Image 1 (tube, helix red, strand yellow):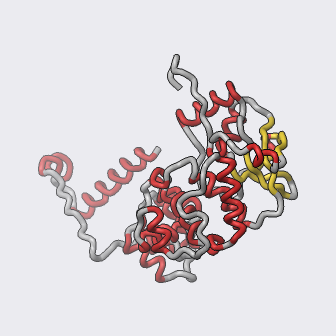
Image 2: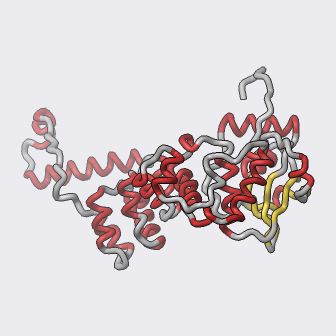
Length: 315
């Protein structure tokens, strides 16, 4: 936060002013230890960083946590449904406790509705990472969309937010890919591709978000088992390579038969259709270093020099 900049109140999803006092009164608000609340076990959204986080910390230091987080009671404590960023900022601000609305008896689908919907109320879909968009679309596409319980939850969230439920959230029908896509300006095929991202292991999702793993490659990998994906991720990390479409297709062709050794073997395979660039050694270097050497010896020296060069760059 810039020096001398005016302080401003910064709110998370449920930190939008709650205009419905009856909603507060109908919920059990408790002061819970920050450390007693675990992150949601399948939380698909990234926490705030940088200036946005700094502003939230400053706001909490000055005003406290104005509105409660929403948590689910578990056997060994609590699990966060809405308020991961407030919890993180409150901890950084030095708070030991945080006000919380405690929910009990929710199914997995119902809990996920809280997680997804409250994040959608604070951020634009277009601003989300690819893996975050995939999680949102999955929740929309899932059959829970048609359950009456969902509408009760959405009405409660809307009141907590001081907002009306939007984007067709109250519809009583199952959403097709086209219908879900229309809500976000996407085609049905785009929705189908994004939904496949949900089948990736977390490290591969992270690569997709960072742009180091292309969508076409990611979609192919999403059809492999978690164990096979982990083998591929480990090999990519160890070998410092990016997969080509040819390599990933080969890997998928041998799904169910992959071992760490076979994964490395297929990753080393060159695409026969890919043109290899011809690199010429300048004449002055040949005259200076290789005039009296056999071609095989020249190749060996060049290979060793190039390998040493790239190994030093990786250190």
